[in-house]
Image 1 (cartoon, each protein chain N blue to C red):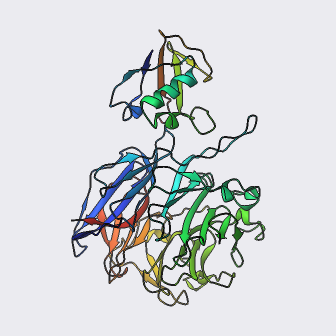
Image 2: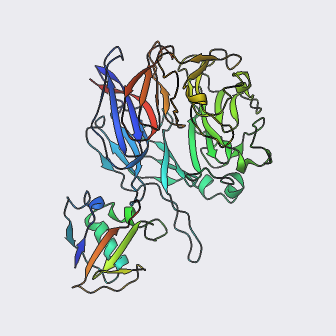
Image 3: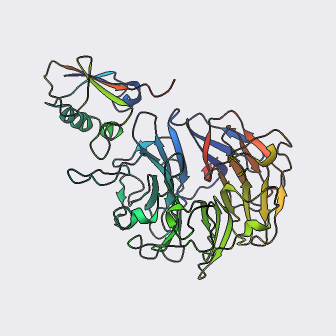
Length: 86
Length: 380
């Protein structure tokens, strides 16, 4: 499926703003992204498997709250830098 | 393998809230050139060269959005690679709340006999060790997972989170380590981190707290003298202290500083050869704790007799209306003769002295908020 990458993570994706990855859940998708782009996941997910405080995930432009959310191959997933300043 | 640099340049590694910079000096250390930003926009808490292999430099970084990591260079900072496994706590058992590293705060190369080994201190309190030059990190479980740890530290955390810092390795014994905890006091291990004990006797605490409770002690910066490792100095939230082991009683040598200046501050810098000579950078710790230069007149204070007497060193520094704040990692000495001193302030200026503090000169301006400065040797 198509994954939209925020600017802060493009150093991992060779500056690509959109990449392809797979997974039946958001958690699996992030593991696949880490396989393709080593180091990616830990910048987004902490060691207790929670999303970092200023990262959001949207599926088909709806913000989801849990990493267990189910995904379909034709979904569009975006990782978003939440507003954390003015 | 240790790399010998034929023609070296003095350098200052500057860590800031918005990236890292390298200041490189000429042979006389009078002319300095600032690099382009390294990891612009990243919060860099510490940038440290490996004295055992000077081509290696480590950076502790995170961004506002992304989690903490360590970057490493093997070519004096020309190119960088990220750690494969940054410092992280163990995942908590199901149903329990686990700890999360917010940022890596402190980096220290391990003992000279352990090439490639490093220690990292984190916020919240945590101690991590790398055996491979910073590529992968593992927690020191004797500290991080110790059941007594909540009784040791973190009782009155500093505003930006509790910090494990001031990792001092005894040059005579790789397993003998002193560390500082804000809050949590000073601790010592003699077995490489398996067991720990406090060294807080003689240290004052904020009025109303119980000085016997280590969790509220706040050493800002602890330094062990490399040539006389039984001598330690400390800039604490409540004064400047010296400890001569085997004694466990800290002596408040800051009481000998002028009363109108006080002995509050963040950094503590030791002369690389003379165990009796240290420098501090006092700040205003009165009323609401502005943490700026007392009276708007920045000055370094130096002692050459282990704290019996102090001398004000402010030649070249602004004489008035200068409200510097210098953080605990943001002042350092080189090992040349005479010793070069450097400090970075939160308003983005780096100042230096090539004569042990007698005269100061601004080396760089307009940098972001400076968190740390460390000296280094780089190829010309």
